[in-house]
Length: 248
Image 1: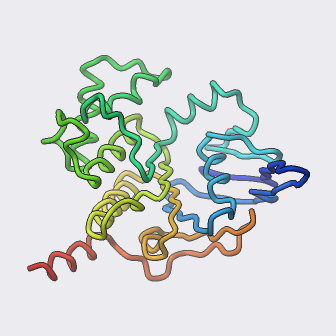
Image 2: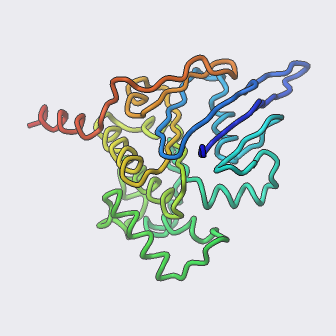
């Protein structure tokens, strides 16, 4: 059973007296455990598609099945529940709250999880576990402003993991990072995909970053131009090793 399936998916905007088809008659299938990149120029429709797949928006017409459930016409409250329990989000600008520390940022999604009522002890334990996964255990009580950009993105990844999502949507996750830090973030995402079998959908403008995934979907004018497996996949661990060798 596919994790994601769309049928005749359409997203149309009215601009003046024109109809703009951001997503046009899309049939798409993504299996559980895939690592997929969506690429395309600005205005190609990839953001509209990701918003629908992330249950942030609904299609104009057509169907979207997430884990075999038709979520195309659910209420805002139902979509919010799905976002909080099934999907983790990673953004280019991290979207962390600077008024609370690292631990509290990671705990935050659990406070809104209506399917599971975590005790404070459970919240702390789960937050510590996800911070360990991203290598930030020693900084759990740090102020967000004390962290580098790469560390902040790691906090964002930990936050996206804390409710045990089936999939993670990563919108330009390395867009604000330098080369080495980008490799570190991709290493975490590859590990989550390989070891925990979390499905990952990533948007990027970088052809190199796309090569870290397993499948690339190219999008333009609301339609899929190509959908191909990655033949020469890059492993982040290898790139980090090469980077370290050059510095030594």
